[in-house]
Image (cartoon, rainbow, N blue to C red):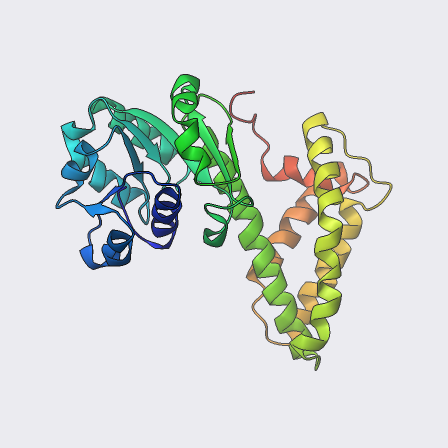
Length: 287
């Protein structure tokens, strides 16, 4: 195991919990103390940790840190399987897979799609991409990390695409929630008063996401329930209100501008799923 941030520690703990032998390396060695008490051993270098096992998990802060660790491990990666669990973009995942392969490793990119507390339990979700035979060979070890572990394709960047899109959804949703709380407070409502009403919206999202996904793939955007034009009108009055109360409207302004661009392009009567085309007018990768 390479890297012992919060997620790395959770992965290490899940492996120890089911009795897997584990060698740890981290740039800050004292983070491993409690894991050593549970049976892990530590290595003095990334290369030493890699040499200790045929299966290597890499979970560090970002792509730059991951590539530095890969370079430090170097030829010790030869003949090993590297499970790349660092959260990165699809292109970064492909580049790192290429680098690890040049060092002689077989690579799986594993995107962790659920938060740290779910690791090792039934609610954990991980998707992997890379060679199917490599995934099948290490399915038992990966199953210790999450209740759902799926192979989603051979392209090393495909798992990272799931991760990136899900982070997009989470952080834009989180921003919307926090901005709504700020707007409510600016209008004299306490956040606690507003929160019960805000909680009704997420219960609507599963059905909406399913409908929007189907329409986006079909290229068909019925507007019987809500149209792009009505979305533009709603966003406009929210942005005006927020601006009048001195709130930051950067994200709202961007959303409004994109929606108005879709109206100008003739999509005003279409359903809001038509905005996927305005956001990404080019042909999707792999299509």
